[in-house]
Image (tube, rainbow, N blue to C red):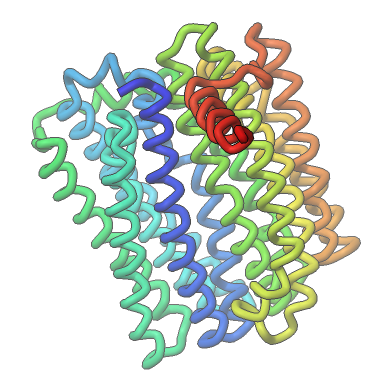
Length: 439
C-alpha cells in the first residue's frame, strides 16, 4: 500500500473514531449537565485543568515511535515492555505526590469534593497512560482501525456505566466511573496488542530503553506538548481564582464543547508527522501542501459550523442559561480554529527541526505569555474576558509557529500541486462531464 493510501486509510478510521467517541462523549456530558449541579460541573472542569498541569511530569518515551518506529520495529516487544514498566513506576510515584495536593484542595477549596474528585481523576489519568505504548505501536503500523475499535468500545462502556449516576447523583460517583473505565481501557488495549501484534510482555527488559528514548526526541517532544497544553488548559485554572464554581461550570461547558474541534486537526498533525519522517523532501512538499489545504478548510468549516449550529447544540447540552455558554464558545472555538490552521507546520517542524530547539525557540515563550494574558482577562472581564483571550493567545502562538517553521525548514507547501488521488478524482470528474456534454 502506498504512503498516500495508508494516510487516507488512517484518516478515514480516525475520522470515524472521532465522530463516534465524541458523539458518545457529548451524550455523557449532556447527562452530567442534567444530573449534576453547576458547581459540580465547575469541579469537573477545574480538576481537569489541575490534572492537565501534570503534563510536564508525564513524560512519555513511547512518543519516540512517531519518529523512529521503523528503527525500533525489530525490538517492538522490548520497547513496549520497557515503556509499560516506566509508565507504571512513574504512575506510582506521581499518585503518591497527588495525595497531599488532594488534601490541600479538600481543606482549602470552597467545595471539599474538589480534592476528592481531583485525586480520582488524577488516578484515572495515570492509569490511562499505560495505553500509550500500545496506541503508538498501532499508529506506527498505520493500523488505525484497531485503535478506533478499542476507543469506541471504551467510550460505550463508560456511557453504559453512567446508569449508576442516576442512583447516586454526585461528582465523586462520576470520578469512580472514570477511574474504573480507565482500568477497563488498559485491559482492552493489552488483550488487543496480544491478539493483533502478538505482544509478549518481557519482564526482565531494562528501563534503560525508556530512559534512552527520553534523552532526545521523546523528552523534548513531551515538554513541547506539555507547554502547548498549558495554553489549552490554564485558562480554566486561572478563571478559578476569579470566579465562583458555578461560573467556572458554565465556562467548562463551553471549553468541553470547543475541545472537540481540536481532534481532527490534531489527527492530521500526527499522521503528517509520521509521514514526513519517512519521506524525502520533494514528496514532503507535496504532502505538506495537501495537508495545508485540507486542514485549513477543515478548521474554518468547524468554526463556521459552530457559529450556525452552536445554539442548537446548547439546547441539547445546556438548555438552561445557554446564552453565556454560547458566547464563551464562539470565542474559544475561534481561537481553536486559529491554532488548528498551523497544524501542518507543527508536523513539519517536528520532523525537520531539533526537538530541543522546538521547545525553547518555538513553544516556550509564546506559550508562557498566555498566563499573564489570561490572568489580566479574567481579572477584568471574568469568564467572557478569558474566552476572548483565547483568540489573542492562539493567534500569537499560531503566527509564530508558521513564521518559525518557514524560517527554519527550507520546504514550502505545494499548495497548488495536486496529489495522485486528487488527480485521479479530477480525471474521473472530467471524464463524466465530458460524457454528459456529448450530444
